[in-house]
Amino acid sequence: MSDKIRILLADDHGLVRKGLRFVLESEPGMEVVGEASDGREAVRMVEELNPSVVIMDIAMPNLNGIDATSQIAKRSPGTGVIMLSVHSDESYLLRALSAGAKGYLLKDSAELDVVRAVQAVSKGRPFFSPTIAKTLLEDYMRYLQQRGMQDSYELLTDREREVLQLLAEGKSNKEVAQLLNLSLYTVETHRTHIMQKLNLHNTAEIVLYAVRKKIIS
Image (cartoon, rainbow, N blue to C red; front, side, top):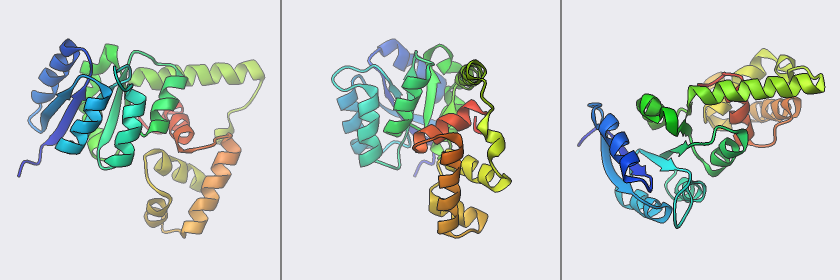
């Protein structure tokens, strides 16, 4: 049985799919197992082909990439979705993360970053185009300066910073507890304190904050 990373390409532009296929299939450990040209087809093909990773255009006909990702995350949680987008602003990234995407690539740098993105997401790690982290950090620092605020990261204890990184990397509370040799209750308490101190409300915002701070790549 092949141990290659199985990839589904979902984009309504044939040229984009062709370019990504060429880059990915130049890698010996990767295999493109299918192509979808709309969101509904992508959801159906994930159930049929069981790929390790889907590269999903955010703007898709019939069913947009965000909603298709949400369905895939619910029906096929073992498949990691990398969102492909022309948008680098925070609102799109937050929507993608909330839907269950594990990675976010900007189209203008996709061919440079796609191999690293697939490698990371296939192992359960998040990946974001380097430009995104830079843009988010600059926006965040500007926001703090405009309001005369301090970065709340300094309020976190060393243990809370450890927990924050593991949560941002996609670990569950139970996995964090096992890795740090803590009780589940203690991890849940740390998570609550982190969210209160940083004014975060859900897992997607935790990931977004970690991208901003370059805690995760």
